[in-house]
Image 1 (spheres, one colour):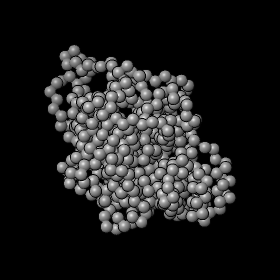
Image 2: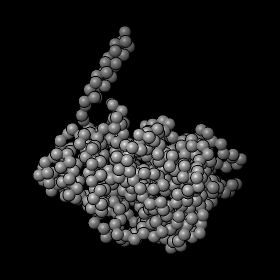
Image 3: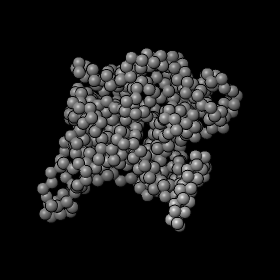
Image 4: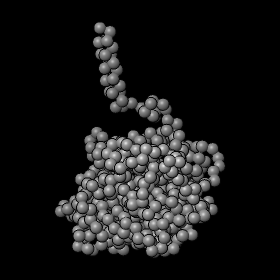
Length: 509
């Protein structure tokens, strides 16, 4: 009797909690119920140091986010891959000891282009950033340069990545992508103004994968043989030129072919019209970081007016033999680095170094790097063992290190570079933000037609937002970036320009 009563009461409590939860408001907690002190900033070692593994909120959010979908990727689900080769053309040995950049070196590559938000069979015409991930099969191991077609991102801290993607994904209630959800989130994220301006331009709807540039987005570190490091950003420049679709062209293309990006790349390679990209780098000395009025390691920023150096050329010349075995089982992660290339202290990159490798362990499996598409050409020797689908051949009973019986030696010259640190552990936003200026500079660099398309594209989604405060905040962000930009967008939405101007005046860039 007591057990029956207890069960009924327990069920009643569960049902009540579920009913209450639909409208509940209260303190934000982790999965164990503990309250969260800061959900906006990762813990870092001082104001410019790397993120800390002890930040359980950051780790838990990324771990849970990585396991939300099975079996397709949570983001970048729809992808197209191709094989090719990268040829290093410049002597940059003073910058990096990475052999992939030794002048004249030819390195096999596999590239996966992708859309970001929607599912595996969604139309490729949808407005979205485009993934541009390159796996270099170097003599020192695999290096993954995992970037996008746009040079910046929406957020600057990995702790916000699950929230951002949740807002952009279809609603869990209606399964429809909803601008009310999108802009409700971004109205709290002023640093997203730059990326929103770029993605709502026609760059958000490329005409083909062959005719778009690529970017590392993040800064990395180049380390030379003396252990000296510099900060570096990468950009792929399409030798086919950059071509985009406007809204009218998008509708026309989608009406006849929602696979246009995949079809274009596959067909071009099949007819031996092999696409090519030149790889450029920008380089910053560590001492130069303090010379900017924004944080140069902020992923929402470009490095304006900094010269580029061309370091090589990539050609894609072979389609996959099997899309699942190659394109879909390919596992890219910023953690896949080689000597001479290291992560910077970029807070978003710090989280991606963990998250991408973790999601591939979940998605492809513990031994996913043994698959042919992911297997390095360099020999693999360590004590990692067992797990599902382990098809390596192990004949030694030494699965530990160190050992005199079967030495697996360390190479002290391959240690990471040293980073001077100071201050206390913290959870604070970056000190130098400058959230709006680069968005305005990008807007002013567009021609008249591109500006008109940007306003129309953005107004189409922002006009669906029902909450007047959210609309006002978003308009003030765009006005703060550029007065003409904000004024034209406000006019398109029949808003009150005086209210927008006042709201913009209160913003600190």
